[in-house]
Length: 185
Figure 1 (cartoon, rainbow, N blue to C red):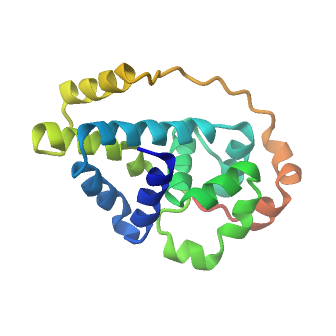
Figure 2: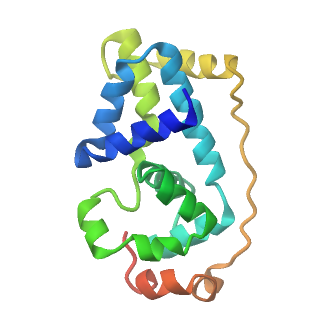
């Protein structure tokens, strides 16, 4: 699966609004096993690319705090917004002050977190193997073993935050102006 096709799937999934995740799962279920695994690797690479101190600080302001899991869900949501939004936010997290308008927030009921997108590939893989979306420990293990067999390693990324909570207002003035006193979560 090319990066271009990955982003095309994300763009097409956005057209389904609240059903975005379900649509993605259904599309992946139609693919060969290899494509499901390739989608997951592309997705995880985007998660890793977005695992930055700068973006975490922005998420902290937007949501009024941001745990490890919350930052995963935030990055999943960011990927779900598509290539252009993803890249702009990576390059300049303050872009999100402009992107998260009232209109966008009304259209995007997931903003700024989308936990469910983190498991679309494993859900599709599970369905292909078992005929159900029910969690299956053996299938889940097989899924991760197949990813590793394709060269994907699950090495934890060490991140050192280069900000303190009291620095965020100065570091992210546009985001702070929008969300500092009125976070989204």
